[in-house]
Image (cartoon, rainbow, N blue to C red):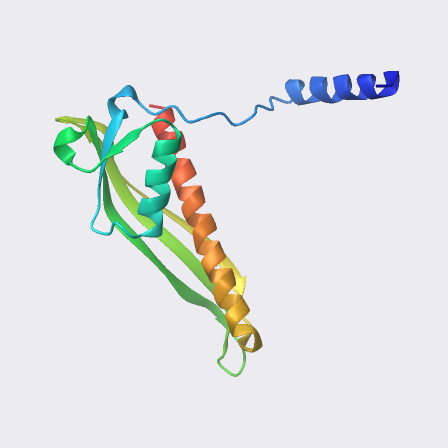
Length: 161
């Protein structure tokens, strides 16, 4: 490795350290959540599946029965839809907004770890009636991205407790 590359690598490292950059580490959930039951009305929702997988990936054992758990993550509301944001002069939709809303709480025995909270994230996209299949796929990808962000934000909240 040449001296100029070493100097450049050192300069970049110093710059990143000086600006406060840190690699995103693994979420640290409270110890009470070591064995968590997820209470939900829909075991097939995108949010439930992503949350379950992410909790497992940070070392939480997701159990099937509330009696086997040390904590209960309750999904109180899990709702997604889309709405029209704008229409053309011919009254044809031109822009849609996809949104996902979740309400949740976390309890350990009689103690509340996280009081009931609600979070909504949105994304919008333009619509072209000549590209229906492509736009349907775009909506699906946006919905998945929203759920990924929701789960990441909730795990960040939990790790700050």
